[in-house]
Length: 344
Image 1 (cartoon, rainbow, N blue to C red):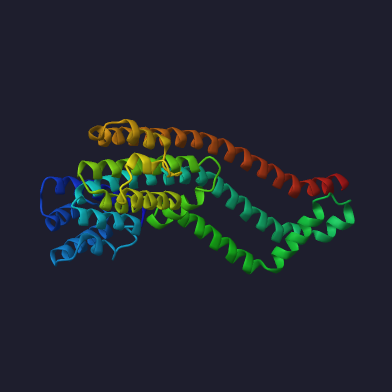
Image 2: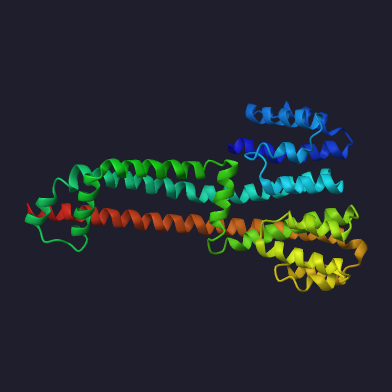
């Protein structure tokens, strides 16, 4: 799925939610949206969804036939929304959640794009120099000058590349294709990229803020719909891909079902934000949905600020690293040539 189609999916969630809130029939609402998207592939998928729903299928089962556009985690939320009668609200919150994830992936692509291009260009130049210059002149290096510390390794590496050029070229093209796909903005590429960047220092905090925002959004929606706790907590576990939070929500749901007040049960959840715990402890029950909405906005603002900060730091670090790599490559490759010229 392309970047354009990813945006189409986000818009589809928002627009279908608005139509359903206007009490329009689901099949007709889905079909009416198809004409508004430029992507012909996505229009076909939307029409297929409408056909399936008109034939009596649920929206979630129809979505499962298109995993590229509708990730399994989102389809589970749609299914829970259909069962609980909160489909319109669930679709709206899915749109908010999907857009936040897309913005994080987009920033990561912007940070990585320039360094990846430079690294592959340098690698291509290095391979070319190894095959056309360093490998043929290996004996000259040994006869005309005393080796620098790096020269023997460069000669050995150049000989290896020259002897295995076909394999090296294939590996290079495969790596280039993989990086191009990862930075393409497709749905699967975005999900993989988000899974990778989670392990980068400082980025994990952004995902924590987004997770808390998503939890508050869906929790507020369920409270407004007066959904019983027995149904609410299983629904909430579907709204996150954080394993710790899933486990805590499941345990909290069991305690609440056994009669423990929500505020008391939340204290045992290590993955639950202390701000959320304080809200349930000190805010009157009638105001909790409104306060959770405010908290979701706060968490999203924190995530946006962290994104901007990480973006600036990432660009600076990438520039420094690339400059250092270029300097080391040029010194390693051209110092022996300068010594040869001096010797001659």
